[in-house]
Length: 275
Image 1 (cartoon, rainbow, N blue to C red):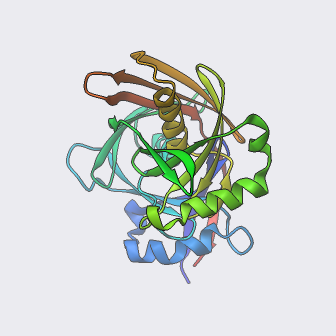
Image 2 (cartoon, rainbow, N blue to C red; image 1 turned 90 degrees about the vertical axis):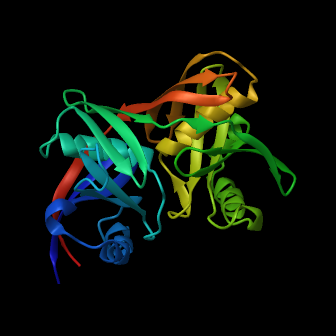
């Protein structure tokens, strides 16, 4: 057995196991193998996913972020996870302004250590698409990982067993697999605020927050309103707290730019675990 130094962190209730792999030097195969063990909420530390801080794997970045879902699968980008990792990195040799990559995409983070607030800038997002799955009108958005948005009434967001059933059915629908999708249930509370519950692929359940889902949901809300307003800022209320999503919309090019996800990030505890 190997004792791994780990840190437990959370961003708006999205919780993660974080390791500094610059020294540990685990292979991706090893990370995939032990992630389900460490993320198990009965037999492990418990988390929505595992994040490894890696030495830069592409030019021009401070570090590389490796993220795996709780089941060990590749989530692509994890918004709240990246905010937690940026806070972690700022206490492990990096400054308050950082650049990092997830696969081939580059992100920028700004860390406010005094308030434990972190903002991450995202690459541009293409115009969403209206799709239909089993006669359900849905919006499909890609924000570094796959997302579906379903607009629902406010009272439906409190019916969690029903959301899990519907979310699982959409996530596993033949028309969306592979690779599957995250499913966001969204209620518009006013023109610049939404409430959100997300069924996450790889966790296979509702989570208290989802950063890339917050971005996808805010963009879908803007898209469905047929609003061509250039500068947009959305308050996204999730079960674990509040997130802010801002972006610009280029109506001519039909693209979303200057996307930024902001919100709280916190250390919970640290320790060593055997795998």
